[in-house]
Length: 296
Image 1 (cartoon, rainbow, N blue to C red):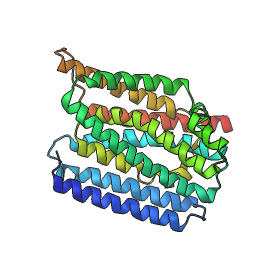
Image 2: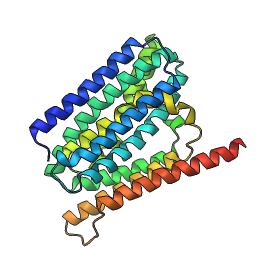
Image 3: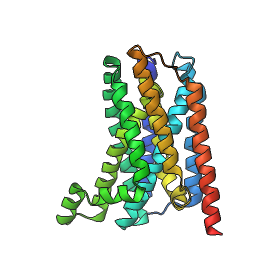
Image 4: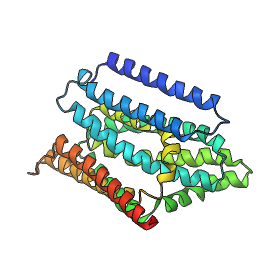
């Protein structure tokens, strides 16, 4: 567990980075983000997360801290990419100007950080008091995985776009920009419900849970402009995420079972990290190969 001083320093630095990103987005709110710029910032944020992960053992007294951070960060990052695909569909359907998309995305990320912060606090409190909550978390993740496979990002975007709140705003004559903000915020809420049980299936340390989530969300605005064009090529990403969620859901149920006296094996963080990396790489490679074959 990290001490209070470590929490203050870490959150202070991350908050400063987010504020700088906000200032840049506001200053360039009428400019379109170029691919080279988006790629540069994405590389910066990924490198920052990797560097932090290699140093996290200095902040958390746990031999598995590094593995837990990277497994959590990769899972949350993959979920964030799926989140981006929904953003792409929502913003294109609402015909939000490319120059305005920067602000919509940044506000959406800030909402996501706030939502996840609330859920992390609630999740940590529940986990510390009720070990059996892992049964519920595990079942919810498996349900989410099945739902992911059955419903595409297009279906999910349609549900949000035609939801009651968005329909209410549309009837009141709200601008597409305002509707987009609400739709993105709704998406953030739904994805927070998925992501927090997933990360608690990997680590119970609130510091690792919080930092893995924040690093996964930082740079999401730039990643949107970078991979928007890849949306139709990563055709098996959803299935890959579903496999990861089923794995973590099963891990949570087994862990809850051990707390109830079940004689079941413990899945180590090394196995979890290796499995997550394998699934992400495998689904990415076969997606690109399959989509390339279709283009030819």
